[in-house]
Length: 338
Ligand SMILES: NC(=O)c1ccc[n+]([C@@H]2O[C@H](COP(=O)([O-])OP(=O)(O)OC[C@H]3O[C@@H](n4cnc5c(N)ncnc54)[C@H](OP(=O)(O)O)[C@@H]3O)[C@@H](O)[C@H]2O)c1
Image 1: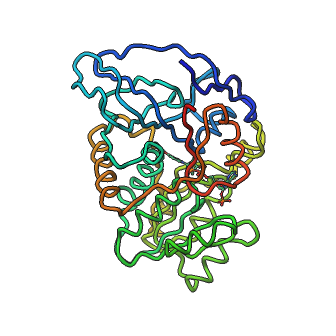
Image 2 (image 1 turned 180 degrees about the horizontal axis):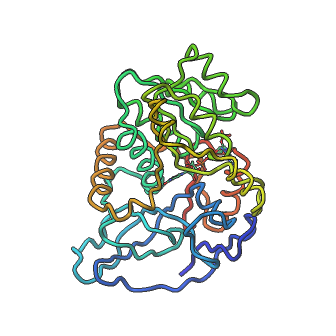
């Protein structure tokens, strides 16, 4: 079968479509004929060799997919023919993928495969950040960085399920109109200092919850913007990725600029710093399932809906990565076998 393969660490040109071995589902597994697979910022980091825990090249990227079940292994209910979405630790961007049945979810008939493939990683991350870890409450304020990206738009939609929440979001200026449609104050982080702007907009009070996927020097800025009782959710290191190729020195420099938080300081300032990595939740199977099922109910109720930026065939995976790195995507990019 064919799959998107990262042949070596480096620029987008390292992505090729190649033959990849097929395998039969084992006990507790099933095989899905993939119709769509999501692209995440993490794929860009993995391609550059900046994603901790990624396989070494050659490897197939991708953590999420949607399609039809075509084979089931022993001890798995016969779901052949069912339309599903699924999560995998890596390897989703392939024509066929063997997945653990625990991480497979039937999808509504009316849900297009492209939307189903756009849901798992972005919405689970936003859900865990806002609902489970920040425990967002009525009337609080939230600052979302990369607000017009996949996780960012998911976070805006989920935050709006809580009444009276005030939203601020950073994004490139061309995406501001969309953010306004979600009731979010857009902030142009590229030409202005967002720290100053948030202070101005909140009359120096700061915000209750900050979603920080930036890391590096931004983590200290974000911490300063928290009100007492504020929660800073750290879930990415976008700052460590500079330029299309692997730049280990630049990444190290940003890493060294990340603050160290002393417990006494956190206590004195009454603030929480919380880390989140979806990969670590893999072992929390029941909790992850409940979160995913809640999201599918919200989808059916029309409370959330993935915003699709573009759909590319596997053969244009490099264009998908280039679009993300050029900061052009609004919402989610999805690949289809094509
Ligand atoms: N911890 C976890 O489990 C977890 C799970 C999912 C995602 N994440 C992290 O969450 C973040 C968002 O992921 P995503 O998939 O939603 O992102 P995405 O949709 O690919 O977002 C790309 C957008 O990010 C913005 N951006 C800001 N700084 C950038 C930079 N240095 N290079 C390229 N783009 C930059 C650009 O938009 P603007 O210029 O308009 O802002 C760009 O269009 C990433 O850091 C990702 O690694 C973490």
